[in-house]
Amino acid sequence: MGRVTVFSIASCPHCQRAKALLTRRGVPFHDVSLTDYPEKRADMLQLADRLTVPQIFFNDAHVGGASDLDVLIAATDGDAAPKSFDDVMKAVLAAPDSEDLRLRIPDHAPEPAPTPSPRTHPPVVTIGGRALSYLDAVRELLAAGLDISDRAYNLTVYRRCFVGSQVWQRTHPIFRHAPVTRLTRLCAPLRVAGIGFKT
Image (cartoon, rainbow, N blue to C red; front, top):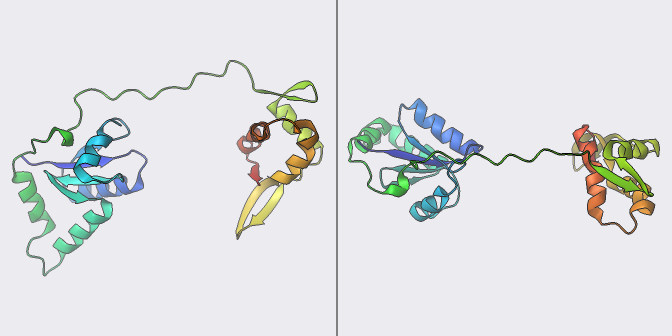
């Protein structure tokens, strides 16, 4: 029996669209997930000479990506087409299975995603010789008059945000000799609290 192989990534909308289209058409396929098996990307690159996903194969024949599958279906579903897509798929699935091991899903289970180590202590920033939690530092910025309001920029309205220059004006005396990354780290809790940051 033949094989339809789809190289995909879990978060890819084009991959999801191609797999949903194959499923709607009743075409069984083997999903080689590059999310689960990142080592298979090298095989996909050798076979398709493309880095994008999805990459779809009918046995050993490279079809292309999701848009190429759309074009193939549109070309074979027309009244003037010599064969329908269903006839093409019957021929593909009736052919012998590919012997190329690069088109196979690995036999081993996927490696689990690494879990981040838990934070053992709350983040601290030193301001004026005082150790403050980020939340306390943000409270001081707000008390110092940081203007949080809706702002328009490039035809987009950003809700509950502040301008980076305001933070810089209020923190410059404190962070004069510190790297800018401290300012970025200081603004991180504002993002978590739903307050945007516009430079």
